[in-house]
Image 1: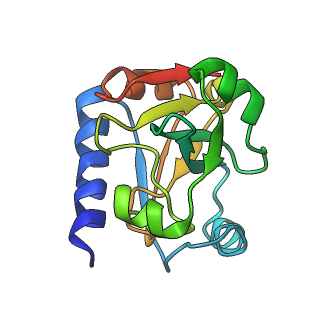
Image 2: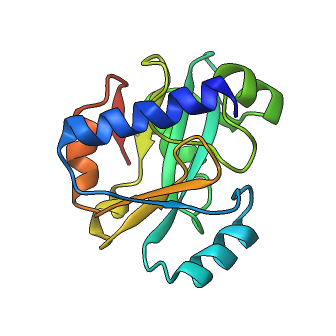
Image 3: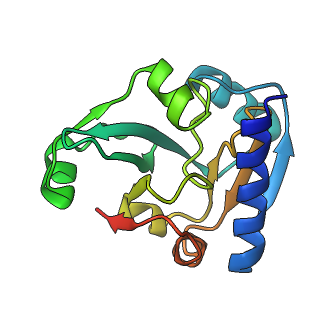
Length: 161
């Protein structure tokens, strides 16, 4: 088990506890792609909305994570307008070097505070949301309205889209 992934996992647990939100955790085979995610979701009977975390580099050199629903596309123009710089998806090597996450399992929370978060406001409307907390063999879920409480505890700058 990667020390960096374990640290991200533990950071997620601390963040959830600090925010005081109810959350669920499942252990399963590693999820590294949407097909496996859908298969495990069906096997476990998950009803939560799967999220997608895209690790982006802005043209001005900053990094950010865009958290949205799994079927949504990158909102390039909206993010550019919001952050003042054009975003592009980072390649796997940059993602692993900067975040410590592995491809297919980017965690949106628990990273260095210099990595900004862009959150799709629509996520707040869902009954339940799930994400991979660094370690791809775990899945966490919270209610959509708890997302705001969780993000208030982030040291990372949070931007709503």
